Length: 312
Length: 229
Image 1 (tube, each protein chain N blue to C red):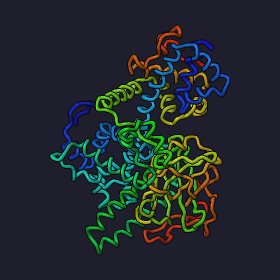
Image 2: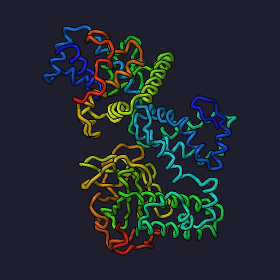
Image 3: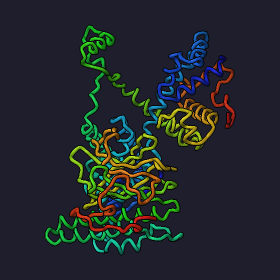
């Protein structure tokens, strides 16, 4: 092995975690050839030292770089969960959610797609949530108004994002169910080309202190974190970009597990799960009744889309 | 609002815009401080996933509590970093999985060298890992400069090289995995990652650059422009 070949092997090893250590272990013919060259070449040995130093600095610097899509996700999170301000605050306080939704510019005008039954169900859930919170306002004006405005804004954002995604040519819908609790159900709409995803669920109880509902995508048995569920009224939801669904196909699964906040473990049993490519009507679990998706803030089912209404 | 990346900005004016619901103001603040907040949280947690969530929560807190910002009490970036630091620590506490790391030198006796101290502590079962000594202010400043140079170099790289170097060092994918992810020939991936690595070593200075001895003094020149092997 000559200088150039040795340096190529060193470069490539430096680019992989623990690569240089593996190369230096000398347990492959290539590694043994590199070791033999280094033993007789002080120049390449010096190069190895410089490369190790450089790789360490570069790795630590690159690990501190924020992912490019974090900006968009952060802005989306603020839109979805932030307090209404400016025009959105005024809209939340005075405009019925369904009317605001109809006037919203987020859905592309063309091509027009049939408004899906399950999207309509989300819109209806928003309206019902408004009605439910309005009842609270009557008795506790200040707290109720603030909660109502926040709830309406959040649910509007979920609805608008869902409509926006559903307008994509490759939008798909996955129904979700609680594997062990038939009272938990949900709906996922995504576009694998834009990687935008919207998931809503009902029947989930808010997580205990120190825990959160973590969304994940499982491909070939390996789970990748997507986002975490937020709560508004009786609805749990998450909206945002999910690079993990880019080009996703059959056999992959979407799930939600209750995990410790900040914990890296995604292996916990799912409380909600569905299969990509399994067809809009195929429930992974076996929810009794088969169709009640949304609940009012009181928790009881209020909308039960008829069989074809939830498909695209 | 000033648009220049390094131009001085009026924190109070920006926050006033946030209070009125200005998303451009929010985007401006993110562009200005988001990267630094992510880096700070990552340094604290060593977990990119947590750092991402801390960034989101920090900007959500900024949006929700903008009225509470008091420019007389401190700058906007200082406020944001304080929020991010608290969120990061909350996450670590909630996870409860990180032992406190201490410099080995601080655990060693006065007549004990670090190796002896490590052997004693490991044998006693009281330590399984130790942190490196805290860097001196000079070293910390040099490291910050290096990181800044690398960030700028990566930003100026051709897209194909930036993509592979980020996949290699951020997502820790092997060359084969990068080739599979991007659908590129393995040889192309190797060429582009080596070229990107060479560029970054160049900006770091002489002690990091590829040395003489291979017939090429410059690792980048040793590679074809965009070889597909």
